[in-house]
Picture: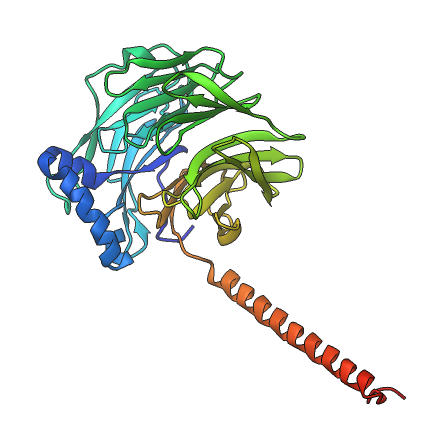
Length: 405
């Protein structure tokens, strides 16, 4: 592809996430200062230049993928790679690789505070732990399989969805056969155990306060109260909609909102729901191609979708207008999208083995066109007012129009 922010790593990729490097480093080396560091970071965000903040954080990515079982010759593995914001470039080769043998790591979720990550393999889920770097500046971050076996997720079949709540105190997993399980972390005590939650379970997400869990995958989208383990709402599809992905977020005034991507015969849409009444607020058609990946920035300001054609679109959530378009960001379908913690970077991964990091900024061409349209609209408005004024003047003064013969 010839771009430094896009690299191919030799294996079809199914998962991509940012490594919470600062959190895991502080947890190991300065556990007593971890909370203090978080408060300091909040102050840094207010005072330091945006570019400096990017350089300090979000420089590591973990990727999952491979060729599956058999003799394809394509290894199954978890990869670690680096992104340098100053040069807008990804490392040309993975910095570290952890092979998983014949087992394909099909789905992956990183614990938000750096405890590790969980991977879904064809029959079971496994936990992985970080080899923490000796300092924030070195590139000796690593990954290893944990000695702790997740017995609760052994021989449960393929899990298609994995999600932690914001604090990392709960883990939800959704199975290919529609079985929903929610566990407390780290005890792995079951909170919800519903074998027939859906015909198949494709996506999950916790609300920002951890109170609700949304699940979808055939039939209505369901909202679960995590504490009572009950369904509090069923969100119905309209017309020929097929729900594909779901994410909780916040709107401009801080109110929680639920976004769901939907496919119809004319293409992909984003539907929004009010989380107090669970009523449909809006639905906007966005793309003609099927949507294969979806994510919302942590600050709630941007939505991102990836298509089966390899395109990536970033929208302003306030008005669902395009902020950036990356046509043919990948040559294969987009399998994963993930915004960085500070919402300024977006990673996308694809079946074509490629990874791309996109800086979140408005497309200047689109912005220029918007300004041009605004200026032209203003010009024609002024012209119309002038014409009306002239017509009124000649009418009331009983004078012939200068262009009348």
